[in-house]
Image (cartoon, rainbow, N blue to C red):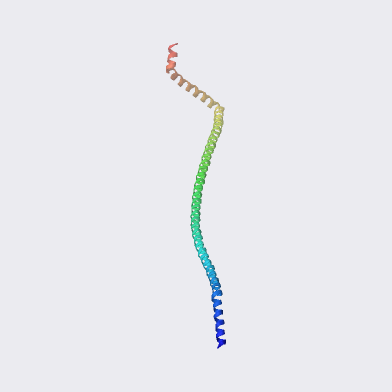
Length: 174
């Protein structure tokens, strides 16, 4: 029984030492570990909060970028339409200018051809008239008929010229 009492006393002493010196150390280690875990949980929650904020900013920036891209695309389309219209107007003006120049050149060529044809026609008419006159006057009978006809025409003209006011004035002066 003494052994049991000694063992019981030793057990109580060990319990007292454990309770007095080991328990506070274990409790401190547990508190430190809990604080460390709580800090990790807080850091994790803060990281999650920062991640959500970053995602929100990213989504906002993405939406803004999409708006900007749409605006740039619309501006580019408007610029392309404006440039196409300007090019079309410029091409129309160029076509009109070329058409006008072509009409002017065509009119100038036509006038030049008309003058050339008139000159050529006049020359040919003179040659033909000369040939007709030469052929007509080559025959003695025609020559004398032509001279007679010419003199008759002059006689017909002479009485008419006497009846004009200038001829009457000149005739009254004789």
